[in-house]
Amino acid sequence: MTAEAIAALRRKVSWHILPLVILLYFAAYLDRANVGFAKLRMASDLKFSEEVFGLGIGIFFIGYLILEIPGALLVERWSARKWFARILITWGMLSAATAFVQTPIQFYTARFLLGVAEAGFFPGIIVYFTHWFPASERVGAMSKMIVAIPISLALGAPLSALLLDVNWLGLRGWQWMFLVEGLPATILGVATLFLLTDRPRHAKWLTAEERDYLETTLAEEARAKEAAGKIRITQALRMRNVWLLALGIFATNTGGYALTFWIPTTIRSLSQGSDRFALLFSGVFYLCGLAGVLYSGHSSDRKGDRKWHCIAGQVLTGMFLAASAIPGQPFPLSMLWLCLTGLVAHSWPPPFWGLPTLTLTASAAAASIGFINCFANLAGYLGNHIFGWMKHNGFSDSACLFFLAFCYFLGGAIISQVKVPRTQTPIH
View 1: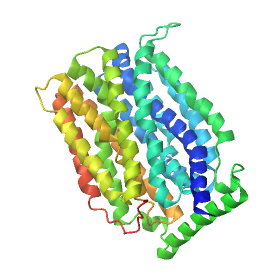
View 2: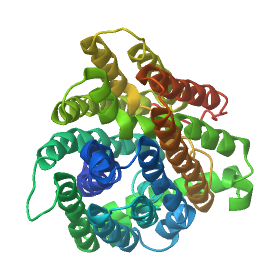
View 3: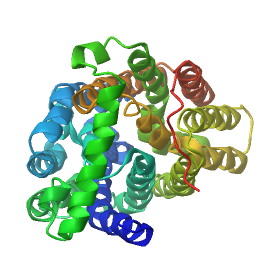
View 4: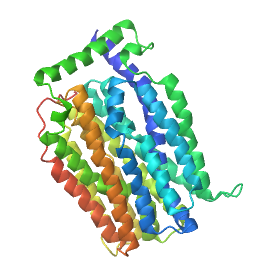
């Protein structure tokens, strides 16, 4: 194929694959994180303490761990389309069911089952991208998908602010929030069966020449990895880099997930404003992440670097969070630091998730990604539980934010020890 035809093929693949994946991830993150919005009213209505809420938020990630590695392998060996459809339909129904919890045990159960239902989605997407995008384009595709996180939270915050004031049919606003925001996932799950394409060879929207070129390119890339040294799954899980990546994301996400879920509560406490005020300013925080995600993915691909782009995002997030935690600042200054935090807080995942696939074979990479993401989600449990415990036991907002900043610094320090071969090719 000519250079022009290859460029046209790349655009075609991006336009057919990424919009739907971004929409799916949009729904996933909203249904995962909207409990942080609901907390502003739900906790008082149900008489849940901060510690109960922290455990309930975090227990989602324990459920997520159960199908993490099998989920990634199913995408590699079975069907992304069918697996993602199952995930979306069940998590949408369970998210909506959270509207009817009344006790802490019911809350814990609903969040745990939601985690089980969503398990395997994110690592499955990473593996799915290896079926469509060459390594040099994969981080750019990841950054475009991860842009769904700040968009979903930025739009979800004001939407949730409106729904919190709704009281229809004897249901509270936070109950309507779970019902309204859970429905799109179920609808998208059904649509996925008809709209998602598993691999290039199944794509009717590609010409025969385009299918052959893409399949051949990806197969040659896979063979090059095999030639460099075939690695079994069990061997991959004993590799130094795999453990460093797992521990690095564990440290970072201990702070990152707590930041995502507790930012509305923190902003309300810092500003002494209303629930609606806190959610609207939370939306500004999340929206700032949009530019950081897009720039990180583009710059990482252009310069052929994954490691140091990841570390820069982690360290800068820690610095800005620490600045926002300085006691005695007026709220506008604290909010400025938080907006800068939001700008870089989502910039590190796209280059990070390019690191596991650099040298591993397809099955080993699939298993390692699931394994690493197990640590990422275990951090979600730990960070939220610790943050809720700190709030329950009277720690100041500054102390809580300093804890989150430390987690980002520690994650960056660990990732700095990862050894990356010089196989990354800049895009000029």
